[in-house]
Image (cartoon, rainbow, N blue to C red; front, side, top):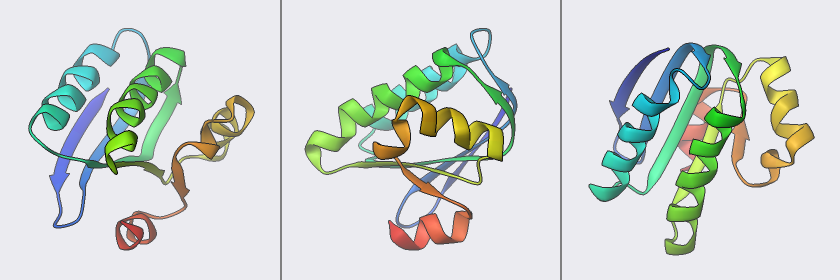
Length: 110
Protein backbone atom coordinates (compact mmCIF):
# COMPACT_ATOMS: atom_id res chain seq x y z
CA UNK A 1 0.00 0.00 0.00
CA UNK A 2 1.15 3.50 -0.79
CA UNK A 3 -0.42 6.39 1.08
CA UNK A 4 -0.38 10.14 0.57
CA UNK A 5 -1.73 12.61 3.12
CA UNK A 6 -3.11 15.90 1.85
CA UNK A 7 -4.18 18.59 4.28
CA UNK A 8 -6.98 20.77 2.92
CA UNK A 9 -8.67 23.65 4.75
CA UNK A 10 -11.78 21.63 5.64
CA UNK A 11 -10.46 18.03 5.84
CA UNK A 12 -7.47 15.75 5.63
CA UNK A 13 -7.31 13.38 2.65
CA UNK A 14 -5.67 9.98 2.94
CA UNK A 15 -5.19 8.74 -0.62
CA UNK A 16 -4.27 5.06 -0.88
CA UNK A 17 -3.23 2.79 -3.68
CA UNK A 18 -2.74 -0.91 -4.26
CA UNK A 19 -4.00 -3.13 -1.40
CA UNK A 20 -5.23 -2.34 2.09
CA UNK A 21 -5.03 -5.65 3.86
CA UNK A 22 -3.52 -7.20 6.97
CA UNK A 23 0.07 -6.64 5.93
CA UNK A 24 -0.47 -2.93 5.23
CA UNK A 25 -2.90 -1.76 7.88
CA UNK A 26 -0.38 -0.92 10.60
CA UNK A 27 0.91 2.07 8.64
CA UNK A 28 -2.61 3.39 8.07
CA UNK A 29 -3.67 2.77 11.65
CA UNK A 30 -0.63 4.65 12.97
CA UNK A 31 -1.33 7.58 10.64
CA UNK A 32 -5.03 7.75 11.59
CA UNK A 33 -4.18 7.64 15.30
CA UNK A 34 -1.56 10.36 14.79
CA UNK A 35 -4.07 12.60 13.00
CA UNK A 36 -6.83 12.07 15.56
CA UNK A 37 -4.51 12.67 18.51
CA UNK A 38 -3.27 15.79 16.70
CA UNK A 39 -6.78 17.24 16.66
CA UNK A 40 -7.82 16.38 13.11
CA UNK A 41 -11.51 15.57 13.09
CA UNK A 42 -12.46 15.30 9.41
CA UNK A 43 -10.86 12.47 7.47
CA UNK A 44 -11.49 11.62 3.84
CA UNK A 45 -10.23 8.26 2.58
CA UNK A 46 -9.61 8.50 -1.18
CA UNK A 47 -9.77 5.01 -2.69
CA UNK A 48 -9.40 5.98 -6.36
CA UNK A 49 -6.21 3.92 -6.71
CA UNK A 50 -7.10 1.23 -4.16
CA UNK A 51 -7.47 -2.24 -5.64
CA UNK A 52 -8.44 -4.21 -2.54
CA UNK A 53 -9.59 -3.77 1.05
CA UNK A 54 -10.24 -6.47 3.62
CA UNK A 55 -11.75 -6.51 7.11
CA UNK A 56 -8.52 -5.26 8.70
CA UNK A 57 -8.67 -2.17 6.50
CA UNK A 58 -12.36 -1.65 7.22
CA UNK A 59 -11.64 -1.93 10.96
CA UNK A 60 -9.41 1.16 10.79
CA UNK A 61 -12.16 3.22 9.19
CA UNK A 62 -14.62 2.03 11.85
CA UNK A 63 -12.09 2.89 14.57
CA UNK A 64 -11.73 6.41 13.17
CA UNK A 65 -15.52 6.77 12.99
CA UNK A 66 -15.97 5.58 16.59
CA UNK A 67 -13.45 8.11 17.84
CA UNK A 68 -14.52 11.08 15.74
CA UNK A 69 -18.28 10.84 15.28
CA UNK A 70 -19.34 11.31 18.95
CA UNK A 71 -17.45 14.62 18.99
CA UNK A 72 -18.85 15.93 15.72
CA UNK A 73 -16.06 14.63 13.52
CA UNK A 74 -16.57 13.01 10.16
CA UNK A 75 -15.14 10.08 8.21
CA UNK A 76 -15.90 9.74 4.52
CA UNK A 77 -14.78 7.67 1.54
CA UNK A 78 -14.50 8.82 -2.03
CA UNK A 79 -13.72 7.34 -5.43
CA UNK A 80 -14.16 3.69 -4.40
CA UNK A 81 -14.19 1.27 -7.29
CA UNK A 82 -17.45 -0.61 -7.85
CA UNK A 83 -16.33 -3.81 -6.16
CA UNK A 84 -14.99 -1.92 -3.13
CA UNK A 85 -18.19 0.12 -2.95
CA UNK A 86 -20.04 -3.21 -2.90
CA UNK A 87 -18.03 -4.33 0.16
CA UNK A 88 -19.23 -1.21 1.98
CA UNK A 89 -22.82 -1.81 0.93
CA UNK A 90 -22.85 -5.50 1.88
CA UNK A 91 -21.30 -4.76 5.28
CA UNK A 92 -23.63 -1.82 5.90
CA UNK A 93 -20.68 0.53 6.35
CA UNK A 94 -22.02 2.77 3.60
CA UNK A 95 -24.52 3.88 6.26
CA UNK A 96 -21.71 4.98 8.62
CA UNK A 97 -19.45 6.80 6.21
CA UNK A 98 -20.27 9.41 3.65
CA UNK A 99 -19.62 7.71 0.30
CA UNK A 100 -18.77 10.02 -2.60
CA UNK A 101 -18.02 9.37 -6.26
CA UNK A 102 -15.47 12.19 -6.48
CA UNK A 103 -13.00 13.88 -4.15
CA UNK A 104 -14.39 17.30 -5.06
CA UNK A 105 -17.92 16.30 -3.99
CA UNK A 106 -16.63 14.92 -0.70
CA UNK A 107 -14.46 17.93 0.08
CA UNK A 108 -17.26 20.37 -0.68
CA UNK A 109 -19.58 18.41 1.65
CA UNK A 110 -17.19 18.67 4.57
